[in-house]
Amino acid sequence: MNGQMTGMFHVIRTLILAGLVVSIEAQEVSIPDPGLNAAIRSALHIPTAPLTAQDLLALTNLDASRRNVRSTVGLEAARNLVSLGLAGNRLTNFSVPQLTNLLVLDLTGNPLSSSFVLSAPTNLTSFTAEGCGRTNLTVSATLTGLTNLDLEGNNISSFNLTSNLTSLVFLDLGFNSFTNFSLPGGLTNLSSFYFAGNPLTNVTFPVGLSGITELNLSQNLLTSLTLPADSRQSNPASGGSTGRWESDRDAAGRDEGPDQALPPARGARAALPRTGAAARRGRGRVPRDPAGRDTRPSRRERLR
Image 1 (cartoon, helix red, strand yellow):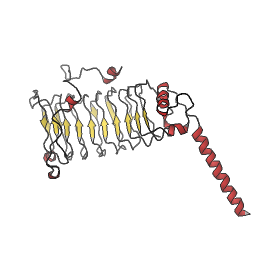
Image 2 (cartoon, helix red, strand yellow):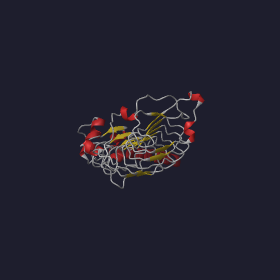
Image 3 (cartoon, one colour):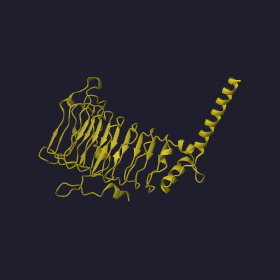
Image 4 (tube, helix red, strand yellow):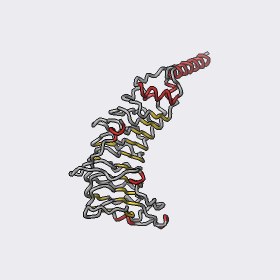
């Protein structure tokens, strides 16, 4: 008798739990922002029916760019989201800690507030925030899996890059307002560093950047450049391949013209093309005022 009662109890408990799961998944999810709501419906091919929690769990990639999005309320239900594009919207902040599977985040062209801190889920591997009008940015030290960081076209004059971001492969800080900058040591996986279009007068790089194959310092005010000694070591296994470094001024600040060859870098796998990164991106020389400040319209203004 006791055995039968126990068996019945387990059956009833299982049915209750299953009912609760079904009930939760069937719950309607509210996405109050019209632009974000339309983007989600488009991605899920659900034009009019109510959106449920189960629907949102099926969402893995979402491009909600240029939809005048001002709020991401409700997006926390899309817990399986891997890639999220929110470029060209009206967001002043972004914080959805529930998106623990998120790997790629693009906030380009949003008017991010001065208090914005990139503290996205720790699995994030790629973050882009071009032309957001930022003068500074804080990146959480917990983002140790970050491989790509693109902050081009802001007004950043100071940026503290923590040394524990050792997975970083690509870093773009081009066309900001840096007059001086130093990379932390230990970024052994860093391969490409794009730093063109800043009013720099001198740059010094630490040891340990032996993996760099492309370094772009063009369109600046450089009067001195110091490369670490270990950047000159070639790797016999790679055939002693060289990378590229680009700087269009000599030690006296005169325009030197052609790009320079980067001394052989340990870990370089192949010589990069002779075309400079600035040319590949279709940029000309940066217009500056007498103080050396960039006078181009901001990325946000160009997105309007």
